[in-house]
Every structure is written in structure tokens, then in C-alpha cells.
Length: 67
Image (cartoon, rainbow, N blue to C red; front, side, top):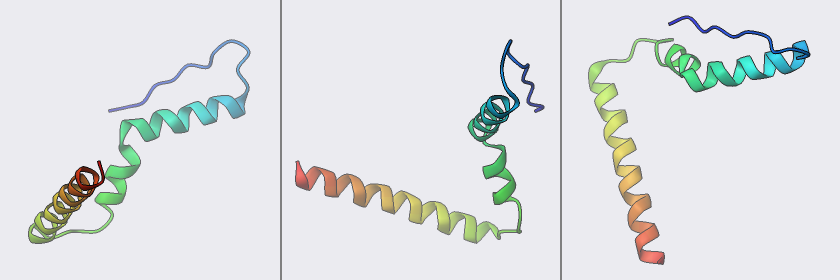
């Protein structure tokens, strides 16, 4: 998916670069590139996802215990 961005009238290069970086980050491309930088075994992917879910559950339980 190509990212397209047009310069706005009277927009400086610095502002355009900042806006482009924000657009790029929101698109998720850098995250996807980092994820594919090295091969990750399917078992490691499942393990990472399981740990992420456990962390979210623990965080939710801690919030409920406080409130």
C-alpha cells in the first residue's frame, strides 16, 4: 500500500516531514517491518501472543482490584 501525501500551501519541508512520519507510523509499516526483520517460528509467535494476552488480563485484574 503506497503512502501518498501532498504538500499543503505554505507548508515547510520540516512540517511536511513531521506529518509524513506521523502518517507512516499510523499506517503500521515500521511495526510490520520490524516484525519481519527476523524469522519467528510459529510456536514463538503463539507464545508471544499468549504472553501478551496474559499481561492484559493481569493488568485488567489489577485495575479491578484497585477500583
